[in-house]
Length: 600
Image (cartoon, rainbow, N blue to C red; front, side, top):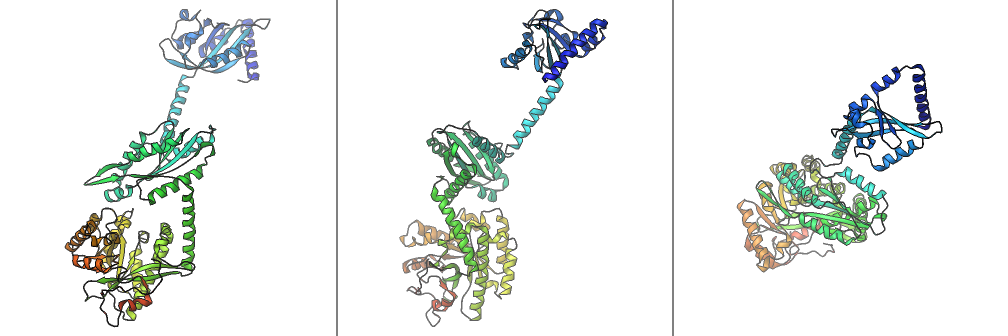
């Protein structure tokens, strides 16, 4: 109540009292008594009189109230400063208005809208107080329910519905509040991003229900690390954020190591048991120096580095990570320009059958005819394929150029069995990839029996896993062969032998290089050959670099050999030279390596 209102109310009471006394009309006081809770206390708070409403709501009799200190009604809701301000106002002759929670005789609480008016004598000295109250308990309870509902709603908005921990919204708000506060100069801040290594595999092989169970289990383990100085949230998919503050930045790495260890466990889903792990990337700075966007970016770069370095590890942000990202960005820009300038070429490497009655095949390999660095193989620009759009554009180039070259070989009657091209998961992003491939084959007059599609196990670990499997079956039924490349270097290779339609298995060079040592690599190769042959499929060994390796693989029953011992990758124009069409048989004891400067 403002001063003007206080003065008017006081004047009103005085006039009301004067009018009532002068007219001997008690009706107004009776009306007030019926509607309001009225009490008179002395300056020390002792109750002098109360009306029936006061007796009714408090539960005390008039005899129990008169002469008692008004503090007997205190609920404990209000602190001492609340009453000190109130007494200071009325002791100085001011009218006080506010809401007070009192306690009944039976212990129940009730709320009253209260106005306390000091009564002064002729000299202006306060002699007692008149308190007029109105019961607002129902309204206050409604407000409390509304507040509670708002808190519940706020909690729901800030909580991840699946894992029941904080979500991305709560994460952003936490950062906003944290950065808005002032902190001591020695207060350090750590932002860590955590990504589950095996989530996509489990989600795709065992279903979304198993993926959800894994997320709940991960969240449950992370909850055990939460504290006032450690905030944890799920910010999307299988990614979690960890925010820590401390005066000792050394503690961050120690705690993150414990979190990393907690993420390593066995997770059973149906008949499969998965070894789970996580990758963590984090950045540290003084809290007063932190910037939300910058530190988020740094943590994200560190997480990328952890995953690129083999996963199941922790990486702390370092400036070189930003430099690598900038190099990748420049590389993507340069490759986009190279596509427009037609600097990409296809080279072909011989794939020799041990059955000499069949002509050889070739694998189409991408090369970048760099204006400054010469011919570059994909290992020099592999990082750029992380850009899905660029990967698709290069895939389209490879497909059309390979079909153009196959048509050339057919028109010039150069003998070959098939040309294989590598296809990535980005190519299958286009759900019309297979139909588009068939249209392109028809356009270039290339029969299906002249084409092989090479895939790696990696492309089977995505959300479109079943779609890719269906597309491979469609291609195979049409006569296009499917080759499973880099076999043995991916995850659950034997599982893929059961589920993937394939004609060839390509044994990776990491095994081929050790074949002459008659150790574990030899045992693996022999096992693969036996399994694949039992399925009436064939085996290709790549990376053959010596005659000894070639002979050992021949004795083990390998069907096709590929590698530098026979030929490096060469341009289309040199295929006749590699084939030695003037006489020698396909398989030779000496190497056939054209004089070319190719960066392999």
